[in-house]
Image (tube, one colour):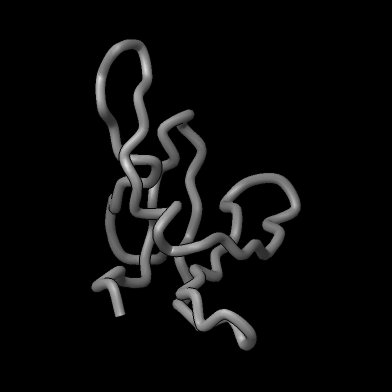
Length: 73
């Protein structure tokens, strides 16, 4: 797998999420990230790991979409 570790991450827009684990899509075998929002209703979400790991351009700078900030509380 891609080396992502469970824990708290900050999205480039500022909100925090907890990466719970990674899994594989049953049809495509694409690696997916299962995570939950650490705000609001705390809903569970799934996103392709490649998208979780990617860098994006923001205000003319390259930044990570999600940045690891520590272990889950």
